[in-house]
Image (tube, rainbow, N blue to C red; front, side, top):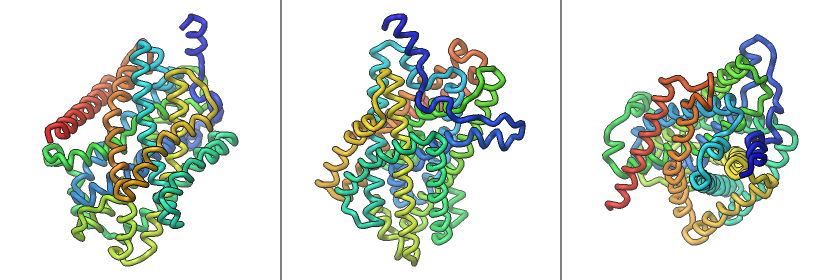
Length: 440
């Protein structure tokens, strides 16, 4: 790359059509200031409750009861810390994680990281395709094959939202999240889980590590919760706020962006645990431990809870999850491609590429293996995300701990230590899972 090209690249904006387009309140009122920063965290939170998460949480609850609630909690805490680092990186440097990787590593290393990031996007898209298709089937009885194809049209929804402004994208996502939250609030009321058993489930046990089947689902939950593409996404969309380049303004932006993502991920935690608790209290307690399919779960909810409204709410929430995660994956795909290889193509073209790559395996499995195969593909896609996760987490931790890159905004030592431990745990768990698979 020539010096001129390098200078142009390093001065390019992340998500240029939305960069700095959202005005930040100049009021000294804390809540008004927070409101102007609220939004990016909720786009990130969507990735923590996508259809792939549903599959792993439902399977984990049906097979192991409330035991894996501790994994939901731990993975969500991991996510809160890592997303705070993403916000710090984006605000402090004006670069997203993909751009920082491109700036800092050699071409071969950056290329490998880009390929892995694209694989993560494809795995995410597979979950969205299948989840949305199942939602359409459950609500409107549209065959899965047609539902898979229909999901390719959601690109037009994303384009429409991008054209009218980034704040509208955030409003759309928050509205869907509120619908999802409401659906699960009613279902939890109907299920009436054992509060004592729920509380016990938040205490980790060694069986999660020693039991290969439980570890596989646990890794799927981690992969579905701490999602690689969210790290690239968050470090970019925090830059949609029009903040001044002063030290004081950046410190304030980092603070409010962290509060925003932490609050949003708190809502994601409630929804994630609600899925697992619903599965444990209805399926596991009824002896239906082999429930691993969203359609089967939907069918069994009515007789177990005694009302058809529960099944309808289940389907509505699933469809909303698929639609909302579609938007965020589209943005993440654009950020990853532009950041790593500096290729800018029309958003609709970028979306059709990733959606096309997801449609092929989803359609193949749907036609050949039906609903059972679709459920297994959902869980496998989340494990793929978990395997890719360290390749996004390690660079993030390294960059935010680098004073030369971060200046006065370098991450505190305690935060670097904790996020380094998180990276180590993720790598160790992945190695353990791979060893279990090989040694079978």
